[in-house]
Amino acid sequence: MTNYELDKLAKSVAGEIMRRVEENEELLDIMFPPRCLDVKEAAEFLCIPVGTLRQKTNCIPHSRIGRRIIFTDRALVRYMKREQKEVKA
Image (cartoon, rainbow, N blue to C red; front, side):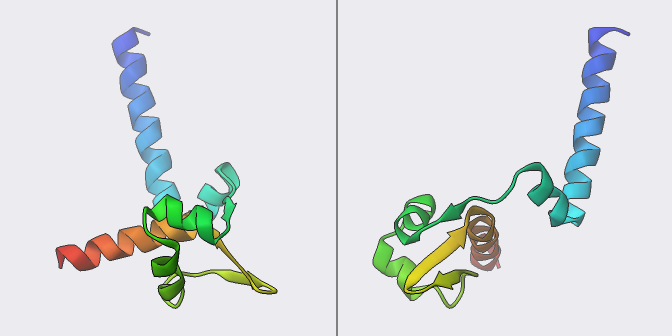
């Protein structure tokens, strides 16, 4: 098999994997377990002030452990994608 054929096959396989992951996010969790972030880390991840993030907690899925608020990186990415769609609309 030539390098060109291998590259073409690799791109095809990668495309199929991405399609299946987009259809079933559980696969993404298996391949790359979500990372938990506290409020400061989540605000840095989103590039927004901590106060703004605290105001938006009603829009972003999170968990509370006592008084601590915990986000997953996956939930923050979904939030950003949702916000981008609303801005474009």
